[in-house]
Image 1 (cartoon, helix red, strand yellow):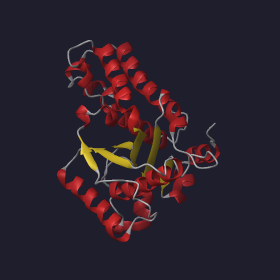
Image 2 (image 1 turned 30 degrees about the horizontal axis):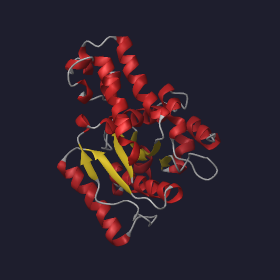
Image 3 (image 1 turned 60 degrees about the horizontal axis):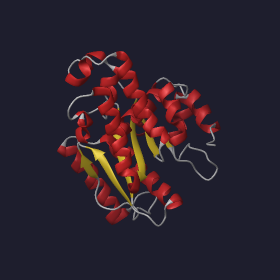
Length: 267
């Protein structure tokens, strides 16, 4: 069994400030779940040295914004060196273990230009393609295995919309790429407050969004995770580990990222 944990970065709404919406999935074999969870818990205990520190939630937004950290008691007075150690430690867990990243980057400006008022909601649009990419990864690397997909909890209405769209596609018309039998069950929603893996994929999702927002493939935390993205048979991550929608706008809006992704080959 494979577990995939999904979280987002930036706003869903088209009228928000952000130009991009990112869904990122972090996946791994369920056999290493306990070890990975222990690694995160050990890091948190080392940083905070407080009772129950293993269940302290870590969000990329809190790490990046001092004003936001002030509202979180266990982060409010954390020294800068400890904060850096926490952030780097989380990323080191991602890079040093057998994990895979698969993400969808939606250019909301391009969506509106292409589809106008008929544009699908970015999260529904991104989820369809993300589940396809997860299925393709499983079919190519683990065709005899199945996967469970878990997401961070948010509004009941949004959860129902995502699950309804997912189940309708599976049970009736199917996705663009049909083989979703590898993904079992509905989408499962878990509270990031008590889930280390949603917290890990949240850090990745922001790093991806930031690289595209700034059109900067050299963004340090994006570069740190680049080797973990899924790749095709030619070891290219574009359209396997990182999929940009709509792809015809990639070179227009993100020329540096376009050049990097079309040249990057995993070793």
